[in-house]
Amino acid sequence: MVRGDGSDAGGVDPQQLWLNSDRPRKGRKPAFSRAAITAAAVALADAEGIDAVTMRRVASQVGAGVMSLYSYAPDKETLLQLMVDHVSGELSPPDPLTGDWRADLKAIAHAQRALMLRHPWLPTALFNRRWSLGPNTLAFLEHALAALRPTALDGGAKLEVFSLITGFAARLVADEIAQAALSASPERAAAEARYLAAVAADGHHPELAEALSAPVRPLTPDATFARLLDRMVDGLDAGS
Amino acid sequence: MVRGDGSDAGGVDPQQLWLNSDRPRKGRKPAFSRAAITAAAVALADAEGIDAVTMRRVASQVGAGVMSLYSYAPDKETLLQLMVDHVSGELSPPDPLTGDWRADLKAIAHAQRALMLRHPWLPTALFNRRWSLGPNTLAFLEHALAALRPTALDGGAKLEVFSLITGFAARLVADEIAQAALSASPERAAAEARYLAAVAADGHHPELAEALSAPVRPLTPDATFARLLDRMVDGLDAGS
DNA sequence: ACTATTCTCGTACGCGGTACGGGATTAGGG
DNA sequence: CCCTAATCCCGTACCGCGTACGAGAATAGT
Image (cartoon, rainbow over all chains, first blue to last red; front, side, top):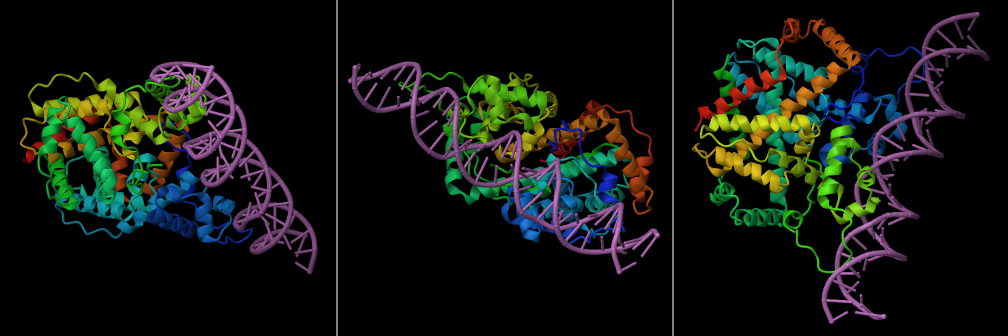
């Protein structure tokens, strides 16, 4: 299991994983397909959350035996990587570039946000595992690099900016989803509010008390995202 | 299990979790302590990665029976939240504020980065679960809010900035750790390089090819972090 | 001493990923 | 046209996980 903290050394050879589409000449014909299995896993994650994606449930969803999945992906971690690349296909074709790299970068971030809202498990999945750079991910990365062409950034810096934007979108969407989940459960929201009120009243957290005493702003998540994204991209602009 | 994508509605009442330190008057004396159990879990995660933190291994580490842990934390998810708050205690006392909120914010981010490098499982843990705002986390949040006092930001915006900075640090450190893990395994690094070279040579990814053709920059992760942090904080400055 | 309360922890259950290996299906070579 | 090698299908089984249950031990108030 890959743990995202880099403490693993395992993994699958990317070439083996992404560049091997030539059919073997002998042997039984496959009854399923990698794409169908991946799509089933994505549908399951969308409908019931990422924890619902178990080898058994995916298999039953596609009508296969559990162990048959291992003919298409060497392990579950790989299946998760396939899922990420699969949904990244929804980012193609991207909006055409305008030549204004700030605007283009913001459009990229908004597209990523929309994707993550459609697939709420995506922010977590992106953060946990090492990027696997499948074909769809690579196509979007290529697009992002093209958007950054007008800048004076070198190759490495462009990659960093892309990682930063993706991470930014993932974080904001994760907050957004958590907030929505809290709002959907009045009981939990009330418990949280009670706790924070108790902390604010203990006298040791004056700044927090003040921050919480302000009226709740009526801002939509969209507006918050757009505002912070503007600040962030403007900041990237300030330098080289 | 909390999944970070907000699809859970469960969880523990924060007041119950953090504000209940009064001892019961009757009954057997506890043989262990929440702090000792949490510390053992942290040590395990530091040494062998977050996946090594299982109830059985933590219990054997503290010399307890497995089920005894459940007298101190209602479930594993809660134990992970305790771990996060535990290591956040290392952020206290923070550097005194200078009054220059940009510099103070950067110092906060650097402290968080150092903490995450000491506990490589922390970025993932922070991203996955909903913030639990234990006492140590709250103390640092209070500090961050104080740092932002010179700004004109309202309470909600200050909280957003803190979340953003924390997320930024987590993302950068996660990349940093992944990069280090890759470098530590020449075999995997070579496989990755071969794959990217093959992609760059296919003619469909000219921007990527160019980005990769540039010489590897000799920048340290520290410099990269500092540079991007500067850009980011400057960007926050640009607005209100 | 009795009793209520609290803590300890052995046992057990259900579920997870996946190693193993035998049977089924296919394509090429004689 | 069979034979052989390759490939895929998948039932069974193993081990490890989180944790529900409940019996026994320790403690404090009566």
